[in-house]
Image 1: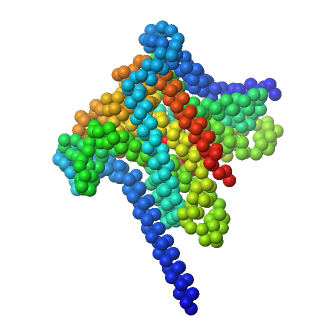
Image 2: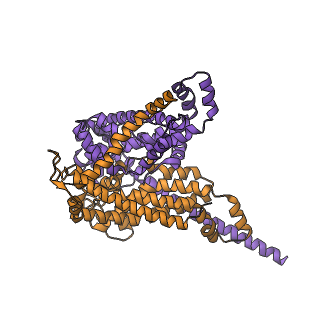
Image 3: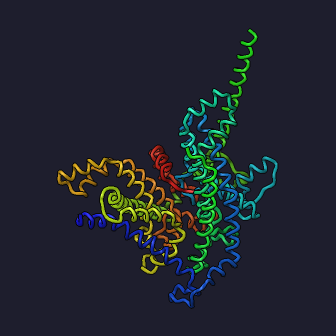
Amino acid sequence: MDKNNSKAWLYLLPAMIFLGVFMIYPLFDVIIYSVEEGYNFASQTYFGIGDYNFAYVLRDTYFLQALKNTFILVIITVPLSTGIALLISVGINSITKLRDFYQTVFFLPYVTNTLAVGLVFMILFKKTPYSDGFVNLLITTAGGTTVDFIDGPYWAKMFVMCFYTVWVVLPFKILILTSALASVNPDYYKAARVDGTSKLRIFTRITLPMISPMIFYLVITGFIGAFKAYSDVVAIFGTNLNAAGMNTIVGYVYDMLYGDSGGYPSFAAAAALILFAIVLTITCINLLISNKNTHYA
Amino acid sequence: MNTNTDFSAIEKKSQRNERIRKIITYVLLTFWAVIVLFPFYWMILTSVKSYSAYNSEYVPQLYTLSPTMQNYFDAFTAVPLTRYFLNTLIFTVVTTLLMMVVTVLAAFAFARLKFPGKDILFTLFLSLMMIPNELVIITNFVTITNAGMRNSYIGLILPSVTSVFYIYLLKENFEQIPEELYKAAKVDGTSDFKYLWKVMIPICQPTMVTIAILKVIECWNSYVWPRLITDDQAYFLVSNGIQEIRENGFGRENIPAMMAAVVVISVPLIVLFLIFHKKIMAGVSRGGTKG
């Protein structure tokens, strides 16, 4: 037994070393960083312990801008992407011809490089002196006036950011909802049809309650993911997000850590902990709501 | 007689409604399929337009009559695209292999071996899944920097190896193998390691392939960590390479050459996806998280 015991630990050793060094230790370390005031990266010294880092971050206009951008992005994209995903999944489930084809196409963005395709989106939306770009071509054809989506007004930039985010997150949601819809017991539908229930009523009274656990799962993971938006934004607006006025909270953390404005791990740690607190709060609220409203079959 | 015609009228009407519903569904699905596919079409199209032709189009053209391969040639010669590619390949292969070894060993210990404190330890493992990457990346950045491992493969790879979720996934799969098999092997005097290697891994191969593919996708697309830890172009991965090309490569206006680079970078994963799409989609619906 004792021999078996030590052998088990030997099997676990690699995983424990990796997790210990790169996950558990950093978790405590980040809290220490966040309370060390005036930490200097080069000399690794600090003045004292306190909440100055949090106070600084919460007053920093760049952070407040990032907070605003992130909240707008979350509030727009999470409901929108879940709604569109539901619509498309219902569509996919109601057809038989070409079903595999549509499913495969819709999943394609999941496996593509966010940075690479983001560059294509930038070109489609960008307006340069040489060309108005493809999207502006569509707008003028429809009778509108051209807008610079990349360097122009705030809401135009926000639109591109939300559009690309929805484009990136939809594959996962469509996949999950399609398989959830397919797994609803067909007997319920047959029973409803015998009773002459209308399609809309079948959808709101049978389908939605049956897949509600999955919808809430997607809403919760969607909130978490959208709060961490970063690389899709970089893909469109470039690495200097503060200059574009399009920074996100995660972007702020990385800017504080590294790059032209970097070298302040204490501020980065404070901002990251604030983000974690926000995400945790929202997730708890989501869980409370979903426990009340979810129907578990 | 009268009631009969009524029925056929109702039936006709419902059939017509059904057809209209079907048409709307297909139009909707096709509309979104176009939005999904259009960026890919646009990047391929732009990549075969010549530099001068592209820049003389004030109104973008949706097709080209004189495709050229010049941009692909430029993409490989003007910027170190081959280097980025090779770096990403090394990073992806080594990280995935290391991850598989660590994951298999840990999953085996949790699934088959008996030792005190196993349940508590496993719960602790699971709770690690809640820790966001953004929180631990700060210390990891400092750790790797202080260890002098910036701009090195080791620095890129080590913090990317761990995946608590995959340990969990594989452990569940290992546990489905009947315990009797293990006991029989024990009676025959087979060692634990040989049993793992000869019996468990072959049986659980489908799950392992899924995990490996998901990790490959994750590695190929990783951007944040490589950006923090490399500022020497010799160690850039493709994502960072794209960003570099966009900001400093080719001259800002050579969009066709940029698109050629983007196509080259996107192709490997798309090919992988087209070959394994059933497996990838099944794997992601079981355990993927993104967005």
